[in-house]
Picture 1 (cartoon, rainbow, N blue to C red):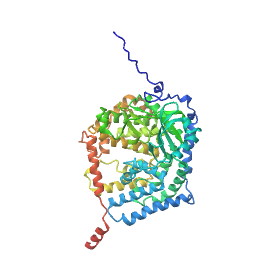
Picture 2: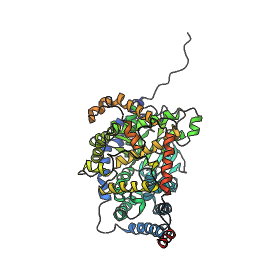
Picture 3: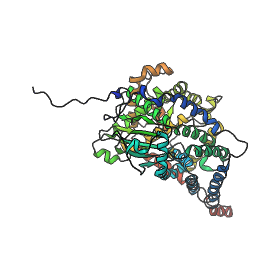
Picture 4: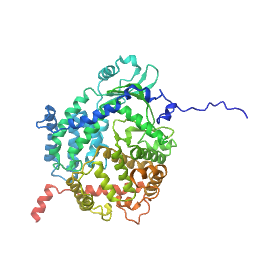
Length: 547
């Protein structure tokens, strides 16, 4: 037999450590990365800074309050004069539109808050989500001279000493930073993330102003009722404080790459951060490419199994959260690229969920409680995660929220009944002092994103079968650890699909439902909510005369 002339491809040695690409611009060796040495101290300092940023002040914190008051006040006055007296739908969307305009004018910090709200479909009011989506790609980049100055100051060298090529036009510009393509003097093609000028000072001033105003907004305007403004500001402060140091982001990249490698999740890859060129305000990383996440038709035409892509993303995400307590916290279309071989490149690690061991166990109990449909376990877990006060009466919460009653199909409710139900649940939650802890918000936000991708990536997959398969995967691979951690053995306890049916408002006669069908149901609910219009001023006058 003739010997083959084909040389077998050797995997990069750093793939034993992390889920990286097969063609490395450099190799990762954590023991030789200097900026990793003090990362835990940096992370701890970032957390300790948050209470100071949002502390209660006796006096308004500086001139930024005046600017914030003016623009938000202008939005509210305009809403009251022109929008409030019209239909309920017009009133709420009008207020959201005016708030979005104010956020744009107020600048980067408010734009960042708007971007978080925009990616929180299902968590924040739909009007805010819809309006704030436009803030994702409407941020003007800093001029190149400013970018050059930041890079040279951070890296301690002239731009040309580090880069052979540097694209002056930003590849992308967000509220905290912007990204440029470049080529190192050593020849590697890279992406350079550069923090905006003076953003750290702007953020601190804006958080002080936000925390001053937030308590006054509770219950005063309709689109904030579910958001709990003071809790939202606290959550935002925790998130953005970490994003202001790119060394934390680079460390997050390595941590998630390591978890993916340990769980043998080869369907996702993480860009390699540069071993030297990472500072507080500059992050040089490997450039990865692929199809945009939303180009589903193009991805399918390339012969890629989209069902396998979304399934791998879901499993990897849940494994990180449940088993390791670390997960990517900002999944959206702009942070995911599907490569020609079907592998997903996962980008942007500024927002990363990190659960300490105690919270990870509470979180794991929450998910396992959902699997076996144990409402008490779920509510207790939410309390332990900080979503409810420590002294909350679990049985009382279950009773007040109607969690112990039969499920109700929301598509069969009238608009008035549907609205009243949402209002009562919201009122009860706020009465208990409920809030959304950062890690739980990031997890739910990501789950909702993946869920919203299912109708496009796997429209005809049966939801019940998918959940059963997912549970079987975790039982087989992590059953022993889960049983040891929380005392619920997924290998011995079957998935209770009644709980799933209840959460979807389906009765026990429904044996299967596809993501396409679920999307149709949700559209019915959305239209019914919108049809619940508040009477106009003219209608009220007519009703009075007839009465």
